[in-house]
Image 1: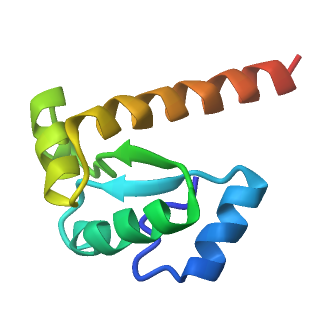
Image 2: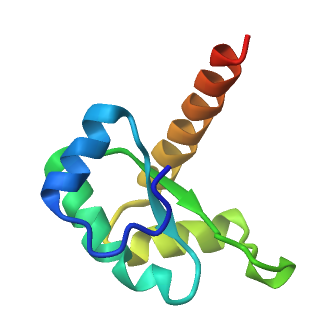
Length: 100
């Protein structure tokens, strides 16, 4: 996962796609300011996204409804949140499989 990638370029997003690196849509204040840019670039390049709170304390955590609002606020659709959850699960399964 490339956490809070900011104003990522299409070139770097394409490289992330090629290498199987997920790009983070962040709920964190400050980092979330570039979520719309990231969503657009990921859409252009086919890079996969993952949602993360980037929580530093318990008050930073979000529920599923807030997460969906953040995703929609980035210019995506509620279904994209489901895809992000699937991407996260695929990553966990890859890590588990690789550790055996």
